[in-house]
Length: 336
Image 1 (tube, rainbow, N blue to C red):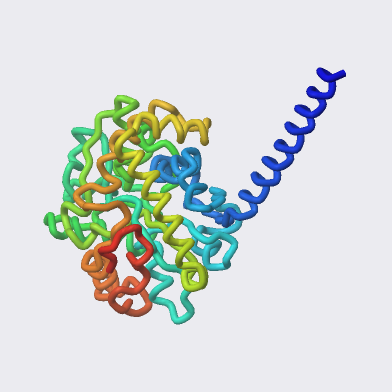
Image 2: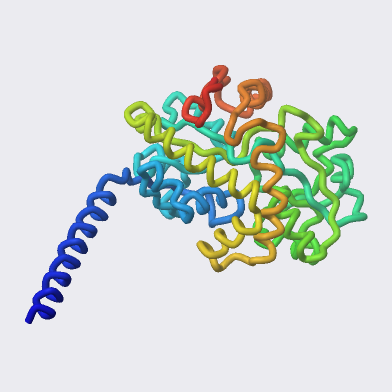
């Protein structure tokens, strides 16, 4: 009887402890601030730091319960502006029309994911498009964007070329290296960290030139993390916690690209593992690049690009200096 009684007491104690533990866990979960983060596209290596922060529980350590979602009912800017998500991903060039509008959406860039613009023109090696002038007489797949075409026209002019001599076709390309091999287009605008690395991984020899190397004004910020202005005003402390955890995730991706790639593939198993690993290794040197800290946006570079857009009448009206971004929520005392 004594043995049975001791067993019952022990069982009761375990049940009580279990209940307390469950209550404590439930309480902890209730205390987590729910955050929705909307991507700009399907998961890729631009997003790795976010998935690392989620899996490594960096967000949870800051008291946050972050859900990462893909845009399904509009672009990330509109979703964040509506308050359906507190954070999202956009790009400085994509945000320009908003800040040049009389009825702009209440969104602000709070961090850059990559320190420099890694986009440029990719072509098959030996086709003569290793410089802008080489686009003359070639076929370029365009999104038919005024800013896109003005950018190419600018670097061609600086190289003694004429954009009017470029053959433009609609860009409906999904696999850039394959498109070049099959002559769907001679030249494609890609971000090297994915499109260029993809060509390397598939053994497709390419030529590539960066816009930023030809004109510093094109070293604008893309992609960037944006937030809702009202959220920032009312929950600035939460925004700082979010970016602190995000920074930790991207720093991990910088230091451990292979493990970070594994985390991304685990979260998005539809991705090509070899491509993710190659891209992750390349981007590990681009997240911070020559800047001391991840996420920092230089006001001169930000303003220079918007000034160029205004001077070339590519936006409805000029954008005032320092519009649309802030470093105030980054985890550093050296904020602008």
